[in-house]
Amino acid sequence: MHEQLLTLIRYPYPLFKWLIPFEVYAYLIVGGFNTMLNIALFIITYKSISGMHYAVEASTTFAFGVTVITGFWLNKHCVFDVKRSCESPVRKQFIKYFLVSFQGLFGSILLLKCCTEFMGWPPVMSYFITTVIMLSLNFLLQRFFTFRR
Image 1 (cartoon, rainbow, N blue to C red):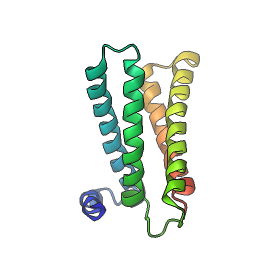
Image 2 (spheres, rainbow, N blue to C red):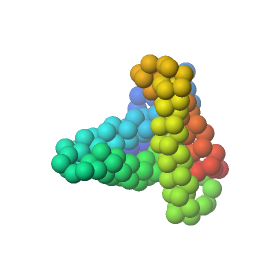
Image 3 (cartoon, helix red, strand yellow):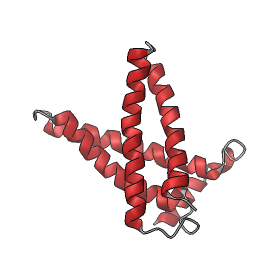
Image 4 (tube, rainbow, N blue to C red):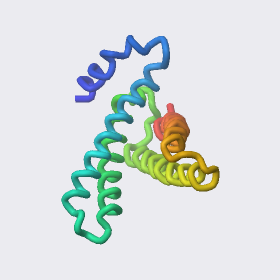
């Protein structure tokens, strides 16, 4: 199955080959898909349990839990060359992936708060800057920590 996904991801890559390496391109494609899945799961879950007291928290937790699993699988098989990555057990890689993902979630919230509340920047601009910083950091951490070669 991951070969078919890789073929699908590779198909438009020649348009971007001059701009970014394949690993970064694939990371952005997989991350974009996983982000859309996260948002869809959040919306569906929230709408189905909106009467609950902690609906936002429960929906966020559920969406994060599912997309950590899908993100790990997609990154392991479609972004980082699994044949060349270290022979670390899957469980150990997943724990590392989870820690980096959780750090990304927490770091985004913290950085967004700093930009909007302490620096007084507009929320949309702050969100964009935060996203670029955290995507870059998460890519480096996943590449050199989780899926280290």
